[in-house]
Structure formats: structure tokens, C-alpha cells
Image (cartoon, rainbow, N blue to C red; front, top):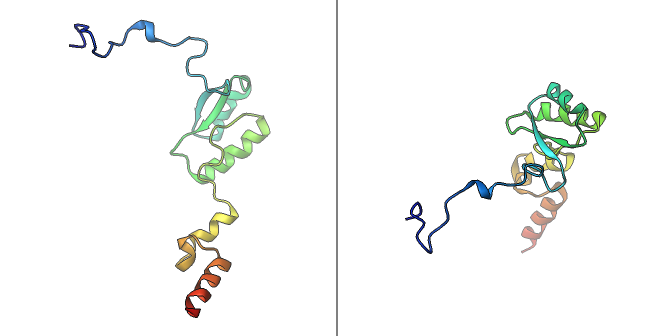
Length: 119
């Protein structure tokens, strides 16, 4: 019924629904994405860092992500996901075994345990 264009049915996709070529694939910040897998691929963005920003691919290891973020800071290239999979000092406490793995820091877990003993 869609192909026969009956009234009340969804419309068929046509060429008229395409976006403006100048703003197609453009982010709200005005940049276009360029997918980066390693540090060497950042060299491509040197000449066009005003119109393209880097996006680190999902399968890049955290070690390589750190290297990419450090190199990006030197080259003045914008990154859409600079903090992805980078662990900070605060988050390292949550990876410890025991009660701290449940999201408590050292101080909070000891206070929590003391409160349980009093009751």
C-alpha cells in the first residue's frame, strides 16, 4: 500500500528528502567527523583541523587512546570522544576487590561498616 501511495500511509523515500550538501554529515559544532584508529592517521587532519574533528574508533586500546589524545593536544585537533576508556585516579578505587568494588571509597566503606556494627 505504501508503493501505491494510498492516503494515510507512510510516504516513500524520495530524492527530495535529502539534506543540504554543504551541511550534510556536519555536527552541531560545525565540524565533520574523521574516524581515527592510530596516531599516524592524525597527520591527515593537520591541514583541515578547522573543518574536521577526530573521533577515536571503538576498537582502539586504552594505551593507544592515551597516545592519540596526547598527540591531538600538540596538533590542535578537536576530538569528539577524548575521555572514552581513559581511567582516572578516582575511578581506580572502584576496581579494587571487596566492598570497594561496589562503588564505595575507603572512607565511605569504613563508615558504612561502623554504622552496621552499632545497630
